[in-house]
Amino acid sequence: MIRREYVEIARAYHLLSDLEPQFVARLLPIARDAIFNRDDVIFREGAASKSLYLIVAGSVALETMIDGRPSHVQTLNAGDAMGWSAFFESSKTHFQARAMTQVSAIAFGGGDLRAACDDDARLGYALATQLLSLVTDRLDTLRMQLTEARSRRAS
Image 1 (cartoon, helix red, strand yellow):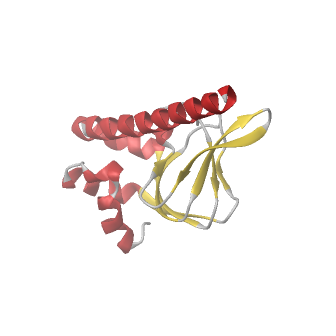
Image 2: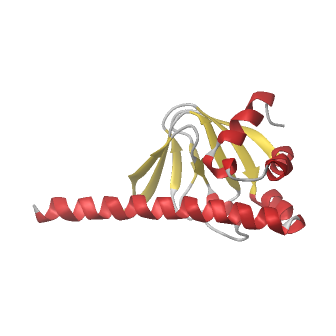
Image 3: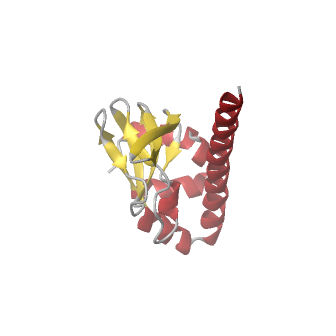
């Protein structure tokens, strides 16, 4: 069960802030606390995607494996979301997430999210729209990193 103070925090998250209050209220009962210690791998690249996380406190490194070694893609902090692929049935994770510090998060099981969205198509559409925005932001971050890497090699 989610701690009471997380309820108000969750309402302010980018992922949930544009949702109608009744949609946020529908999601909170399926939320749970998740705590990770420094250097814990929260999920591995290519693994079955099981949960969507909203980071309450701490920092997480999103990494991709290159030649068997993790390569830093992006740092996520309080207010950020990760594990968006859990929204889609049978989806795999696209990155590895590793706790850089102790991390407190709100977790939503993918099956619970899909069930809530199946019960209310308007919630499903609203959440899918927010998740698409998150995916677009991740792609933009990767594009900038590739452009910078290409510029460094050309110099």
